[in-house]
Length: 319
Length: 315
Ligand code: HEM
Ligand code: FES
Image (cartoon, rainbow over all chains, first blue to last red; front, top):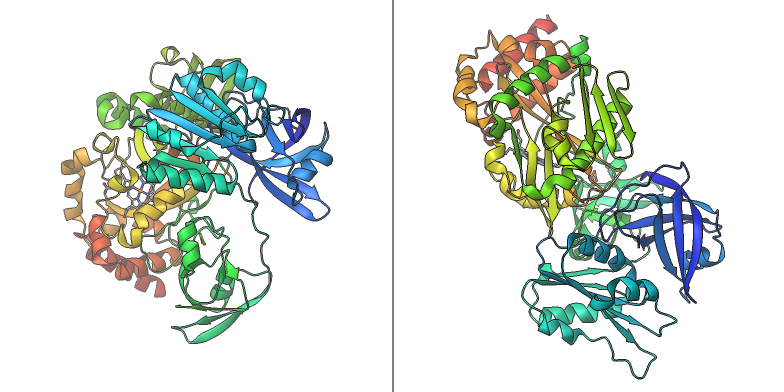
């Protein structure tokens, strides 16, 4: 459904024993779309088990558009994405990627930017730092890795950002640990950004809040692979209309409602405009829209009928 | 069906109308539409820009990079969609744009404002029928940072410059109910590169007037008093604004384009389904929406006219 860009792998660089950097170039030979600092792309990998969607930050400076670069860490318990990138992809491999998307953009009003990265969480900060240097704005990076060998982009960081970069090597007894308390000393107007494993991001977020950082000054990014979509048929009971209708496996709930003559407003039919929202009275919803926040999803009292479905066999709607 | 009617972006898909996010994905993903009214509307646009520069163009200083992105998008769309009428050649950063409809050629260095007679947004706006608005996305909000606006439906660019999305929409009654204003803002903030959106906004206009600016209300507002059931077919126009939303990849800002179309009720009534549906929508329309859309003074006259047309056709 989303438009895709056909690319091939021009070059593979082994950054560390477990991180490879991939240089991607357009198959059509054209420039790739420009992007903003902090952007990522979704890669679509055709594996025997179906298409795997994975998100990776673009790691080059945003001014460069003749190629994209992503960095992939091989995970021990890989569900296929990183293992595929590391073991199946070679120079010349063709694949499709999304247009760049940005869910982790730099603050415009921040007086100073402080980045905290753990491991491969360094990747979104590379384009952000390049942008801040180009704009002459102030920042610092705190980056934790196991050892020098395991520290991706070590050379680049040393060469380009030596004065703004603080490294913490956890396997090195002489090196200090990366801790949240440094955020205490920052001046007013500082924005903080976290990227790394969920535990690290949560720890730093909580600390920042406890030090009095306003919520708008705290930024973070967690990459989770999208959950595979449920496709089972299910039933919906319509409370006001006193009817029960069934939704087929290749039919949306919205389509079933309209087919049953229920006047249900809608517009985009792709889970993004929010117009088809209906109140859910009971049952568990599998949400596939991009309208609701995490909190609204968890509340389980509203759903977008054009894409979302029942987890079990039945939902009760207020319609 | 007349050519004008078959091209008209008819706005309704139901017999009732309420404020909602009525956006859909834009296919094909092209920002610009050139219609047979091009020359007429460009003449009007150019004269408004010459006589009322501050009313028609505003920008904040930090918007120049995003303006270049808009210029590039608009010029590419013109050239790729209408290659006979518009050409664009590039040698490195040195660009030449020719508008064969207006017999104009402009050479400039892309990225260097000193090589253009106007700011980039103000320049490309002079070649398209669309109004072009730049919404900056910063720190979790959207701000009106720049715009070229010649054909407003009763609002002022100068007044709205720098406002955020919710402030801009605050005059609309009921628009904040259920946080619809914030939901639509959040929807726009999630726009993605390569997936533009489109929506159709509608209202009625008494008199043929594309530039219904707030600043000149005293001139065109009077027409509302002159509408009768007898003359409504010729004096009242359905006004539809085709509004498109594009994510600008480099600046992460949003381009909002507005192409305004006018058609007389008489012309529209040639399509029986349109006639019936507009009638139902107007009869059912809540007073607060009718009032906001400025049709309170003549809505009854229009309904009478439509009723008469419906009966006439029933014979
Ligand atoms: C992001 C770019 C947008 C800008 C700059 C913008 C600007 C405006 C302005 C200036 C008005 C007139 C307000 C007044 O009375 O002073 C207006 C009205 C309105 N806008 Fe937007 N708008 C934008 C996007 C949208 C979107 C995406 C929607 C989606 C539903 C929307 C829905 C409306 C509605 C329903 C009205 C009332 C129109 C009427 O009843 O005729 N706007 N907008
Ligand atoms: S119709 Fe747009 S979210 Fe469902």
